Length: 208
Image (cartoon, rainbow, N blue to C red; front, top):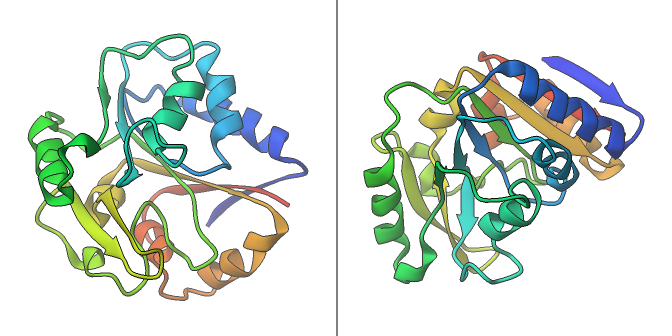
C-alpha cells in the first residue's frame, strides 16, 4: 500500500491536487462525497487542459438535487467553466439501466483511464460498489445501475474492471472515523475498496 499521511484535510487536498497535475493524465475519473471537494477547488483554479473528465458514480437524483455528484463537481472543479469533455450520467432519463447504457454508448475511450479518484465509506464501499450488491460481479460493461437497499436508492456507477484497469488509483481518506476501514483494508478484508485497489498501482492520501 502506497500510503501518505497528512496532518490536515487541507494538506491532503493540496497534495492530491498537485499529484493530479504532475501525473500528466489525460483521462481522469472523479468521485463524489465531501472529502474531495477542497481538492477540486484547488485543482479548478488552474484546470489541466486537454483532459477528458469522467464521473465515477452518481446517485439517481435530478442534476439540481443537493445529492448530485455531478453538480458538486461542476460547482468546485469546474467553477470556471465546464470542460469540453465531461462524461456524466444522465439521470433525467428516469431509468437507471437506460442511463448506464447511454453512458456506455458515449464512452469513446480506447485506453484505460489514466487516473481514478476514489473515496471509501465506513462499510468499505467505493464509487457505488457496495458490499453484497450484484454490481460487484458485473464485468461485461463500463457502467451499471445498482439498487442499494440499505439506502433505498438507485445509483449508477463505473464497474470494478474499469477501476482496476486504470493506470493509477488515488484514494482520498479523511477523518478518524475512517481509521477502522483503512486498517481492515490493510489486513485484506474483502471490501469493495480492497477489490478495487489490491495488486494494482494505488496511492492512499490519508488525513488523520
